[in-house]
Picture 1 (cartoon, rainbow, N blue to C red):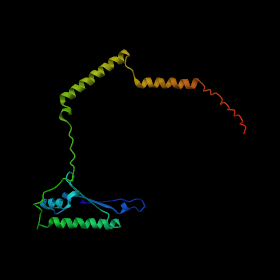
Picture 2: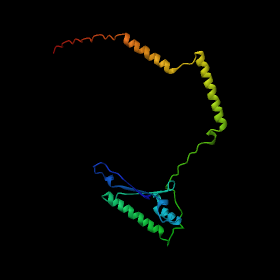
Picture 3: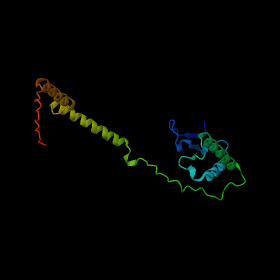
Picture 4: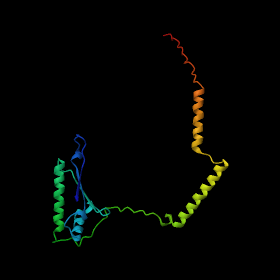
Length: 182
């Protein structure tokens, strides 16, 4: 419901030069009362601050000493831009939209040949059932190794070895130092 989004940065009591900076973002389609021609004119007016992929305009200000002043300045700037966009005396029809400032990122799509078809799903299901049957046969014949059981057996033997063998440590040897004549 709020077309203008302001972002502030605070540094928890410290005074840093970046603390006064305010960033404003808004979507051109969310601004009320603009026709499509006026929206296009607004995009031409904001120039490189417009992102054509997300339809967001991003502006920042840190020219004043407080965040409140910078926010007020950005709000007034948006009001001025809106008034200019609604002014029908010159709609900039002779100026083309220029998005050379923006690098479009390719939208990656999942390849069609990688998608699971019903035939491939049935084939995978048959393979899984075949493997389950083979595992069941190995288990019946005693050839299937249960990893958790093996680990438990090894841990039990290690515990038994620790409890049956008392740990004997050799006494520490004293190092004799010779007196050096000076």
